[in-house]
Length: 172
View 1 (tube, one colour):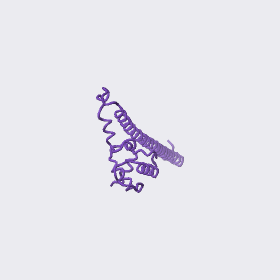
View 2 (cartoon, rainbow, N blue to C red; view 1 turned 180 degrees about the vertical axis):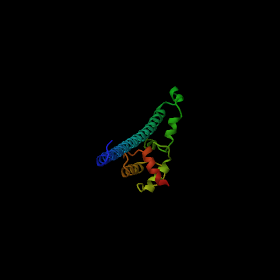
View 3 (cartoon, helix red, strand yellow; view 1 turned 60 degrees about the horizontal axis):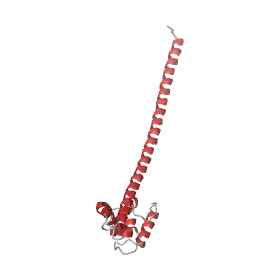
View 4 (cartoon, rainbow, N blue to C red; view 1 turned 60 degrees about the vertical axis):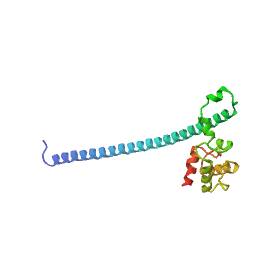
């Protein structure tokens, strides 16, 4: 065993090395934690993005379901009254046709809402100046398109789920 000044230098070097190793270990573990946080943030961002895409696809499915009901209602009304096929059809497409008072409005309004409520909401949004009469005509369709444009929606003049979700907030 060493004694004297040499022993002191040796033990202080050992202590210094231990402190250096300890500091290095803390720094490395801190970097790993930062990397984990960054990875977690990236994963959370990706999950949020995928959830939005899923919601958009769900809305698209609902729009397509209404379109199928609308087309089924048109097929139903074009069949002869005495045909066997007319008796076999379900009542569901007829429900879609009853959503509004005119045949044109059933192709424009694809959510279950009264045309009067649509016109009232459009009027409250400041894009419709006509009468609230429940008749979906050119003025109502133009107002729907204007509303869609001003809210960053697909401006097709069709009142689907996305448009109605935005528009119905004006009824409150």
